[in-house]
Image (cartoon, rainbow, N blue to C red; front, side, top):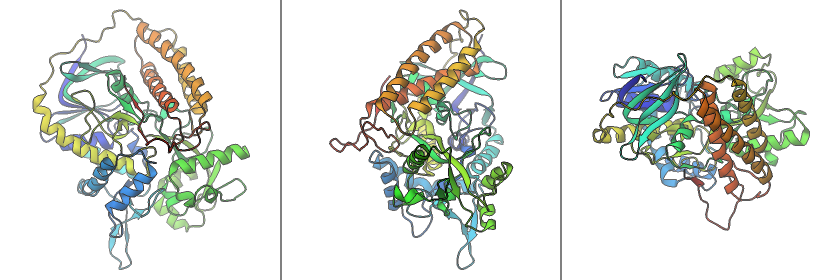
Length: 527
């Protein structure tokens, strides 16, 4: 018999979106939070830069909206952009009240104020941050409060397997793989929320942690939800290049504070591609770097901040400085080797401003969701902003509607009566490697129709093999993640093949210009 847990709200994911939602609901409802690995292991933890928010008297909501719309290359939903941007300041005030320790400095009069930095695509300094470890500071502060709350239960090492749903009642909960015991258990709830993050691990090189395997997107798709704009995968321009070491992001704030991108010979090049230079949006910078690396046959580009005072660098970028020091690089004295890497999934499960999906009783917030905020390219530091604002609006909607959703009765047991233990785990590991390599080679920063078609043939074969394997053998952690990654890869490829233009993060040599003969449209896929 399958072990069953029950709660009013099941939140899958323990990043900024899931934790802030839980704290807003906990005074009135019983909450269960599932973390795939440890409670601190999420994309939020690795967000260095900060949260974009209007807090300076010289800035404005209208300016933040305009910058976001421009970065989104014609595909942002303007109403959504205004909704998220306008609610940003109050969400930041909530974080400050909850103890988040953002970095301060002094103004010209010697008065203490929050330090705001500037990142690519922004016309003003509007990124509030905690040195260069903003995500960790936010997640740690929220997690401390979550752990102290009697109405919230936390479950580590729980990997989502599939949503449980029916036509009459919508989403009823989920089957979950308990990774330490290697058994399937069931969580039933009146409302379920996906806060599972993105799918960076679908690529060979990524800034994302190992947990970012697109689980929420794949499960929602299997449950009948629409997804949108999956072709728009953001490649962060500056990941530390150090073969053999774990991936590590070099925050965009380094460029915001004057960091210069250099070729191996020390020459600057970004102004040849965009008048904004290093502060152009990420899609432009990543493509420029990719072009120069291929043109020169170079393994990396260099990011130089050594013209700034050493004490400034160590004070503003302590995390980056320490990581570089471990690898024998002194960023106060020399440039840092960097390369682009998969960073953010701009598309996802379609939702409204309350996080509601197509499936009654199922919500999605954060990177897993598509709200229309990011369009064809996410502007720097708008991601944590979206997590906080959508968690706030979803909490209000859930609290106002949960009375109409009774707790489901006992759900069907997980059926393992017709499967056996696998003696071919090597198949799973080989397919993992093949998937991530062909996605990097064929569906990366620069694409062609031929490359995409090759990727589609390979992913079709993988999906067939995975279905066969899944049918005959007991589930394992790697099999579940591979199943989800292959499904997300298929959605990315199908979306990319359907867009016959280059826009934002999707650049194809076969259609190198924006299609100006038709109004811009989102790519919507229906199961």
